[in-house]
Amino acid sequence: MTLEADVLSAFPAEVRIPAQLVADAVAASSAESPRVLVVLDDDPTGTQSVADLAVLTSWEVADFTWAFTHIRENQTKPAVYVLTNTRSLDPAEAAARNEEIVRNALAAAASTNGLRLGFVSRSDSTLRGHYPLEPDVIAATVAAETGENTDGVVIVPAFPDAGRVTIGGVHYMRGDAGSLTPVAETEFAKDASFGFTNSELAKYVEEKSKGRFPASDVIVLDLNIIRAGASAQDPAISAKAIADALESATDSTPIVADIVTENDFRALALGLEEAERRGKRLLYRVGPPFVRGRIGQEIRTALTSDEAFAGNTPSTAGGLIVVGSHVGVTTRQLNDLTAQHSSARTIEIDVEKLIAGTKTQGEAEADAYIGTVVADVVDALRSGDVIVHTSRLLIKTDDAAASLKIARTVSAAVVAVVNRTLKTFPPRFVIAKGGITSSDVAAHGLEIRHAIVRGPMLPGIVSLWEPVDGPAKGIPYIVFAGNVGDDQSLTQVTRKLSATF
Image 1: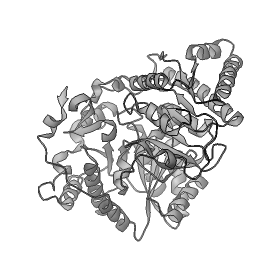
Image 2 (image 1 turned 180 degrees about the horizontal axis):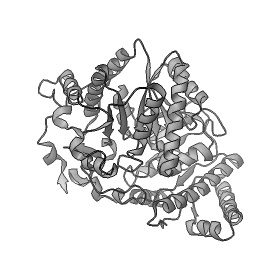
Image 3 (image 1 turned 180 degrees about the vertical axis):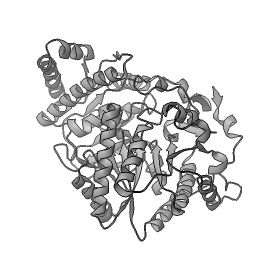
Image 4 (image 1 turned 60 degrees about the horizontal axis):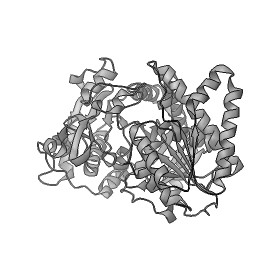
């Protein structure tokens, strides 16, 4: 274990950069031909670092047309999130979904006064997900549709608000007292579907690409480059250094970047803007905060209780907290919430019973079991908040595909509980804990098609969506990643929204 201060001592201080400087640079490049970033988010937790942006759970051409119109009419920042949920899919399904989304986005842009698109493949800050498959598919689809080849894929998993930083090309997870643990030494690297062994990002690229991209070919933008203007506090020096370092990028060259602070994101954004002005065509494979920095958005302060319900009349029903994630921090957060919120009713979905039912008597038995859970939830919502969680024993196999199938079965049950509850007795709010859980609850449980990300519920993390259509319209929906926050975070968010806590 290493101390962050010791690792950083070898590098320059950060360059102070206001968000408006980035926003102005982005606006200047779009003056003649507007450009929007389409963020393919492999689970909905990527929205936790941004505010007041459109998010789609469907991706027909008409959906993109709605989003592009929303951006133009409301003068919002130039980005739209598309909830792909590909982290829950097998590689073939993930590839097909990425291709379909890119084709439809390009088709919508072509009919919107020549709108230009950039593409962001948003994934996990702890390196889980379909890499390099997703950026590969996006690049190939863009080339097939437009004839434009991708020069570089910029890989930026850092998420400082959640304790993930990259220094010297190594990706770390912050711990207590300023300690840093290489991410390959954490529980996330042992993921049944997306495990890995390398914390040095260039070697991670080589590992995941099975040698197609050797570590020696990866361009590393370390803090010496990101902070090249430190001594003069001149962002232009850093921007030039970054753009210069990318001159050799061609044919989807992997590019990894050090990030420790928001100023580093902004320095990188200015450098990427300069590289693209020079003609480089780039794709991005990133963690949650990258987009905020890239479009020059200020850090949104955490929403207050009043802001969470702004424009809507809160229901008198209790709120629904749904917990599906199994990572350690989620279980600790669940334990804290149940201990602190004594008036809430806790209902467990027995995963072993659910899976046994699908194996023995098929869907009927599982459906009957779900029906009993829904009846209990609805009854409890009439008097207060309800915590619904899957049993904490994680059932998995050594087979990645089988593990994903189990995850889907469990997620389908959670979705059914939420959807039937919504249509029987709508809750005051809904919190969904876990990436796959929050994705499926949004798209299928609450039937959200279009929403606006209003901002974070805690500083830098946990986003609130306002559904703008469907049966959940007006009900605050909280997307809560499984791997963020401290042990009290779920309790803090629930307290903001609850009428009985």
